[in-house]
Amino acid sequence: MIIDAVSVFPEMFEPVMSTSILGRARRAGLFEFHAHDLRDWTHDRHRTVDDEPYGGGQGMLMKVEPLAEAIEAIAAEGPRPHVVFFTPCGSPFCQATAERLATYERILLVCGRYEGMDERAYAFADERISIGDYVLTGGELPAMVVADAVIRLLPGALGDEMSNRDESFSTEDDGGLLEYAQYTRPAVFRDMAVPDILLSGDHAKVDAYRRADAIERTCRWRPDLIDAASLTPEERDRARTLIERYHGRQTSETE
Ligand code: ADE
Image (cartoon, rainbow, N blue to C red):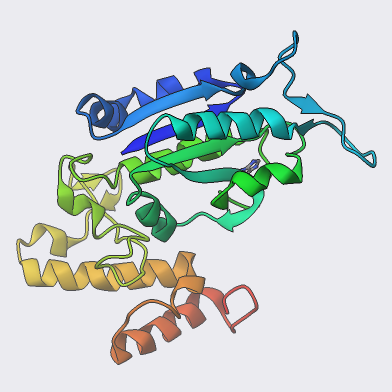
């Protein structure tokens, strides 16, 4: 896979893209990463990428011409990229989106700054992504969040292929539940003991315990996921009881 990013702060990416699992996957050739400086597509002495909004208003906007020229020039270098813009007005990012993005041969991550972009720049977007309902100072951190979620899905990126499966939000296998609690040594820390079943060596019991724990945690922390989770009728009854216990009567928050 090829991942390109265009930004006025291209230097933000290198430490993330060369560290830990992403760095190892990159050195192994699982993906190529190139950060491009948007100012390379300006034509004035000050390398201007922003300007005042027509009609007035707070702050500055990213100009359309450098963005358009950058996207066209980067696209002309190789396979046509799937172009993603980052904005709080985008579709909420989730694991299913990461899984879809991981299937493209090439993605181009376009990072805004300032108060936003000239709306005409979005004509060059295949999609717009938000990483949550809060406002950051730019699209670079969202682009790295998305790149991380995508790269770890590339075959071979994680040492153990299975660890992509039974995790919270994975759309494979877990039935849409949060992940069960996990423990490592020591068996007792201060007054906190690892549940006995996990020390029993009985794999069927361990699996049943973990399934029940995943349901319990989801009911407690993310009751909004329960409706879409795949549960047996008995599990759904249990989930209803747990949601009642943790959240009392159904409120708009738990519905
Ligand atoms: N740019 C600024 N805030 C953002 C957010 N929450 N998601 C994506 N891009 C952004």
